[in-house]
Image (cartoon, rainbow over all chains, first blue to last red; front, side, top):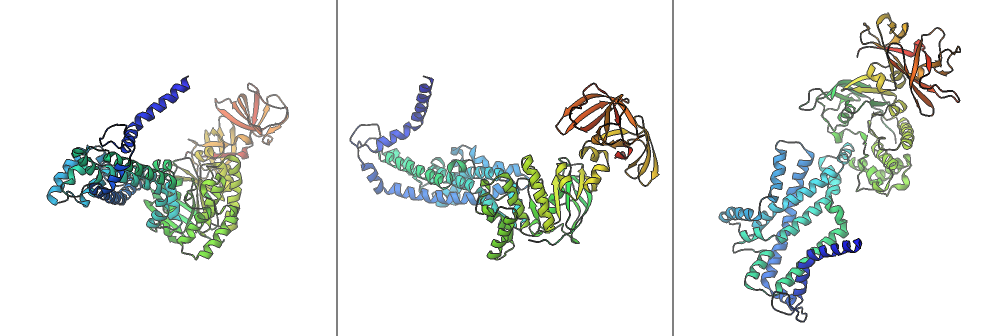
Length: 260
Length: 375
């Protein structure tokens, strides 16, 4: 009896978590043209419409480019910072670490407004560069976290052993440290990509009349239209996320990646 | 594999960490001859690992010189020192195969691929692991990982071999086997070796000479037998083996490290001791528990258990207050007249055991007592 209750509980929790996705999934295949639960004959027309929606296609292109560049930029900044924090002693180390983690605790609305006020006068609103800078700021804490985790769990004596065997600092990093922390880097970069791709609030602030990411485009679309095309797009985005997770899982084991 | 024999000398080597009062390593001098295996032995925090890391170049000394074959290495970066080191955790590269691990140092030396391959093969054969060359470290047992670490350190024909507690992660049986194996390989190659351990058995078994470290200084540097039989300080006597201390009341130097020593317990004896002791204050006789003879009081015969008795040597009455049996040896604690307790280790004999409460007599051979001073 208890076992049955236990099972029911688990099913209920999963239903609660998955309900929004199930609903979206259902609506997206429905031929009704209202964005609501309806029981019309199934149809693929909303998916077909997606392909001709220039706004969404352009938004996806912008999001893909900015998310990719963001993922690379955060690695280029995050890895050296993490290395410095994990392996060296220097003044204001705590302050440096706090500075790079702090975007996590500042509300997005505040960040968005601040960035808008800074970007406006220098013409960065609505540009690739502006979006990348903003997204780098909010995703770098994740990369630093995962990289630091990998660095602190890695055996420091491996690096020492390499040096004793004749490797200089750069070779040690390239041949020993980097391969050992690589799963952590991938986890951080994937997280940065997904967060950047998904980010709406800050992007909305700094969009101006220029480049617009997919979430902003979707937000704007919803203001004027309410048909299941947006649901179809959501399903596509969910599938992309699932594919990314599966690929990372296959390539190196997600659990290992997430644990650094 | 061969080894150019290296001579190591530490001169006034000092390491003082910032914001600490006393140095971790306090201006030590140490001379390691070509081909010798020297153990740095001491409790944790005594400075032995700090010393080893300075020799390796992983830590910069605050002062002093590290002289290898006449050349001071201080200031030479770690990757240019040409040493071989085995770490406590083995520090095998987890993403490389065994062969790649062993070949890493040779690659860094930019040797041709063919030579790297041959020498890796040779090194793995030396530690009997040639059949596991393509495995990853994670797929090996602790003892096998240890051997890979040793092969990786030795394959580069290092000037010095540095071992940092290499056996402490192995279980007891394996540890003893590895002691012999490391010692044999070290002797065959003739690589001058510095070996850090907190395990006295390991040091006594493997080392040509032992440097006992305590609070950042070397308390004694001598071959194992001398460390055990002629400890330089009370600390050495207690750290290596078990020791009874019998406080001296009067000490008269007789020259040549011999003394006439009086104590409440033993009367006056002529014994050997550490040179240069001038006063009885804080001086004590060290007597090892297994060098004492013991018999039930009233038994006329000489003790049949324990050490050999010299006729006419001092005999002390006492009462057994504790007895611990460990198979080969029974460890007794005996109350003696001056309020002290004496530890005695006697080899067990069938059908004959002293029990708690037994009145006994303890016999000393004065030659087994050694006088240590206040230090």
